[in-house]
Image 1 (cartoon, rainbow, N blue to C red):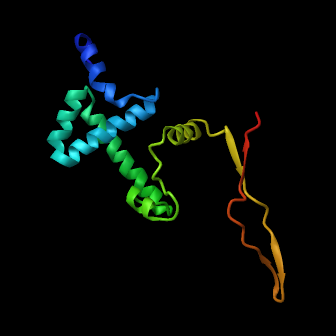
Image 2: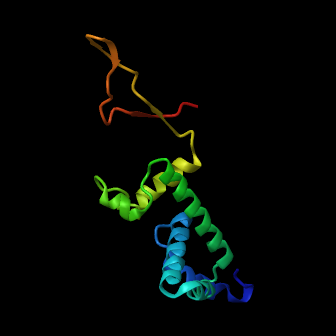
Image 3: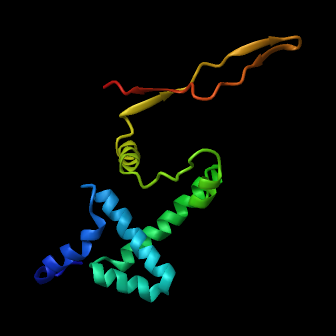
Length: 149
């Protein structure tokens, strides 16, 4: 959406979204800025934000719809349905979602599914009076390996 004659102005308007030398993090910050403007001032404020930063309002609306759809699928699978819900749960939840190294690891895992593989522990059984019963796994015994090529 950058007119050729306004390329320098567009670069300056998008500068606040950069920082960690990552396009994905810049996209995240642009989306969050748009969403914040939209929450604070409605759809018109979201459009103004896009105009000021040379962003596509339609693309951000589509991204938002996709994000909501994925969020619903994750909630149906038992993951936290919101950042607040995750943060109120055990541990850190996803409170650290804005740490650049965590985001890079997530993006890497999504883009390169064959980089790492997880090996679940073998099923163990315990003898009881009524016969063998599957023993419960201990937390933290999943092992990760680099995928062999």
